[in-house]
Image (cartoon, rainbow, N blue to C red; front, side):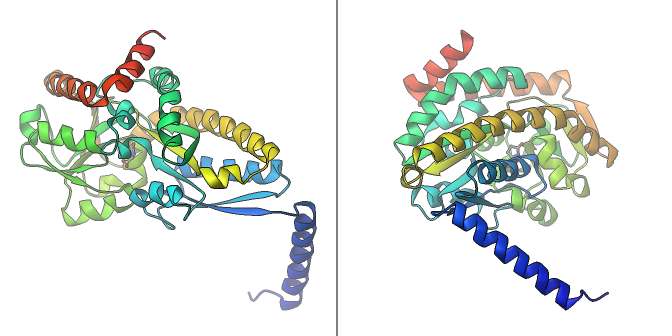
Length: 330
Ligand code: PCA
């Protein structure tokens, strides 16, 4: 059926009138593009869109945030720089992806430091002021952070011990995942989630560590057969703003954005927790063998975890130690 052109025109006029009206209320309407790296359908991206919409409503249209998901505006590994330099005023990125520039950013990828959402929340409260300060020195304002579900390991075969991993090409998403691969005798290759399906299809990667969420988003059952629940850690995505763009907002707008960011952090965290088991169930429903890592494998990974924890503490210095100490006291 072809749409009625006269109706379309009337609709167009109405939309234009509404637009003029909104513009009259928000005399200095500001538009922010917000690059996000993960799939449009992913809860992080959906939560970012809800945040953007809430800011639009609460500011009466004075600040319009437009989310670009799936790495469509900037790729994951370009987003921080884009926001630092003002090419984008706001963006979202995996926080631990920056641990090669400052080890402290890897606080949420220390193996077995936290293995549950509850502990992850405490660790975030312990780390947040330090992360906020480091970002402030980099021309960035932290708004909110939302965890991924616990990390497990994906393979194309049964794995009973770390010895079974020798020589496997392992997709990494930060320095910790690369180091884990090395210590397990695998070959790490850094790949964004957006390119993961392609990497598995072409054999560039044969295994990886991630949440059930990313396995589900990437339909990983098309390429891999086994998922081992390890609960190695719960990494976070964070949303941040360019400092000049932030300071250009008036105070009441900044307060609204802060308020909506608090809600987004709560809502996104609740969503992650709610979906966590469902994602893993979907892996099984699509034919994968899903199991808790066996005792042998678990023991081997814990030994690697001890090494990685020592290494992280030594490079993350006093700031890193202060986070772990503050967390231990919570
Ligand atoms: N998904 C992201 C990071 C952690 C996760 O669960 C990824 O695999 O890129």
